Length: 224
Figure: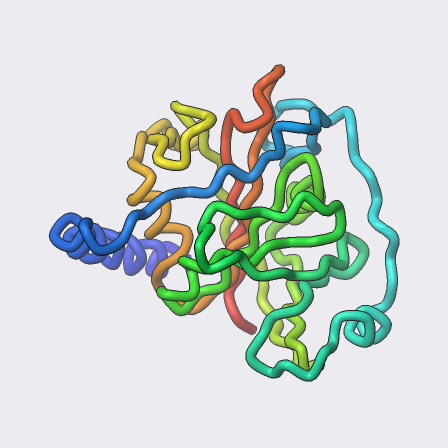
């Protein structure tokens, strides 16, 4: 894992250099994955001691049943994400004109359009909606990505990151890593979470006290 992280750091440095040169062509930001109209505490990973007062268990169905509900014949489109005994979520796409769009439905994740440019899969959800289930994931969980034609790709959770957003309501906030204490720009975090070897990144917000976008949770899974 350390070798992979070292490789990723070198990729971040290279990509950040490219970004600084061509920043007029693309705007890097981290979507705000919380919905201001709802105020529900979320369950977080056990190694960070924030609110753990609220946890809704999603209705569980088998993977075959779930595939049948989301399949539409579109082989190139992701239509669902499934983790046994954790969640079964439909996946929708962001509008081409709104890279910050995140569905507010309790059973829907949103595919992050900008991540596609880096050959990765980004799935966004509000911590007041489907994102509440992301914090139930842990190392070793198998994430199943379902395509419209019923094909399934399997990924294993290998990395979990939690950051404080220094400007909670800004997509361009700097972030402080809650484990290392290091502070990074939005571009740095984007490249770390969404570039590099092909992988899936699940993102939601972290609530602390009354601030529902206080931080960001990222869960990274690599192909099996």
